[in-house]
Every structure is written in structure tokens, then in C-alpha cells.
Image (cartoon, rainbow, N blue to C red; front, side, top):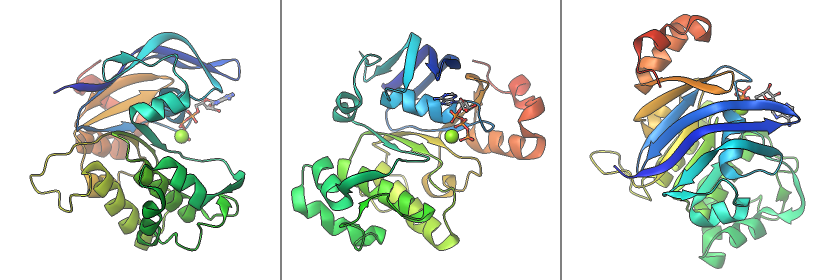
Length: 251
Ligand SMILES: Nc1ncnc2c1ncn2[C@@H]1O[C@H](COP(=O)(O)OP(=O)(O)OP(=O)(O)O)[C@@H](O)[C@H]1O
Ligand SMILES: [Mg+2]
């Protein structure tokens, strides 16, 4: 399988603190990888670093995307290459209407706005992005933006957190559509889009399945393995002992 994303010994600093301390990780074409890890271990920072946020400074290491070194590229250059992200806590964007942002992210123009009702976002298009949105509304809005953008590598930072039981079904099925490029059933259809997904509960995995999981601790990937095996291990033993590190493939 072709490698979509490869991260090599990545070190990064935010707020004068080293958060990423030598991350190694890869995601192949069509692969869905999960990123587990305790609060504060650096998972969101890693995603923000892959996306190229200016608040994070890469001090050494490399981010390769489709074989190209993107470590020095800007956020918009990375987005144009096909990377998209659903943030854990996206900012309010005052003065920009959601509908205008969606139109600007898509090559389909007005046409893409028709998708809004499928995300229950048709009444939000005239509102400023995220301003006053509830937690669940923010998730649906982020996903609608991603659908307009149609990236071929998707970073999902806790897509199901704070989402009620009814909306989790909507979020899960829309994420699945994104990964399968609109194909409606998982069956034996090949996934085309690659993704890296952060989840604490694993709920989203019921909808999209996953091929491989990584565990991050204190700014490093400490082990990888089969997603459901690792999740079970974490639920039973927590991250403290991480017996998995002794039993699964060491990186
Ligand atoms: N700009 C910054 N300045 C100082 N510290 C920062 C900055 N950005 C992130 N951190 C710190 O880096 C650590 C990792 O944060 P990050 O958000 O990546 O964790 P996480 O693994 O996503 O956690 P969670 O599961 O709670 O979302 C935290 O201790 C956080 O406070
Ligand atoms: Mg986080």
C-alpha cells in the first residue's frame, strides 16, 4: 500500500514547551488509523502540526505527505494538497458566514449548500462560523465543511465527543460517507480516503472501522496494534501500566 502520511522523529514546541518529543507514525492510502492517548499527551498538537498551524513550531523531524516533504508548507498549501481537519475546539470566526466559508472551500460553488440539510445545518448558513453554536452543532458544521472540501486525507479530532445519541448516528454515517467517497455501504468496498482519528470512547469506530491504532503518551507514540484490541486493553487497564506496550508491536 502507498504511504499517504509519514511522520519521522517529529519534535514540536508550543508556548515555549516541547509537546511532541519524537513522533513516528504512518498512514497508508485508504487506511483509517486511530490515535489513542491520555488527556494532555499531545494528540491534538500532533494533528495541528500535521495541518500546519502557526502556533506550533517544528524544531526537528519531517512530515511527508504523498511522498512530499510538507513540514515547511502553510496551512492552505497543505489543504490544497488534500489534507482536511475536523478540530476538537475550532475557533469562532466573527464576520464570516458559514455558507460563504463552505462555498469558498468547494469547487462546486452554490451546489454544495444543498448538502447543508443532510447535516441539519440549513438554518446556520447565514450565521457566523461557530459563534454561539452548541457542541453538537459545531461538530456537524465542521463535518459539512470537510464534505465541501473533499480532502483525501482527513484528521478527525474526537468527532463524537459531546454529541448526543441521535446525532452520533448522523456524524458516524457522514464520516463514513467521506471516507468511502459517497459509497453507501461498507461491505467489501475499498476505502479511498485515508484518515487519522482521535477517539477516547471508540464510538466512531462502530461506523467507520479502523485498520491500525497508535497510542500516544507524553509526546511520543509508545505502541501500535489492532484498534479494538488496544481499546479493550485501555478500557481494562487504563494508560498507566499500558501492558499493551509489552505485548503489541513496539515502534
Ligand atoms: N500553546 C500552548 N502553550 C502551552 N502549552 C500547550 C500549548 N498547546 C498545547 N499545550 C499543552 O500541550 C499538552 C498537550 O495538549 P494536547 O491538546 O495536544 O493534548 P491531547 O492529547 O489532545 O489531550 P485531550 O485528550 O485532553 O484532548 C497539554 O498539556 C497542553 O496544555
Ligand atoms: Mg485533544
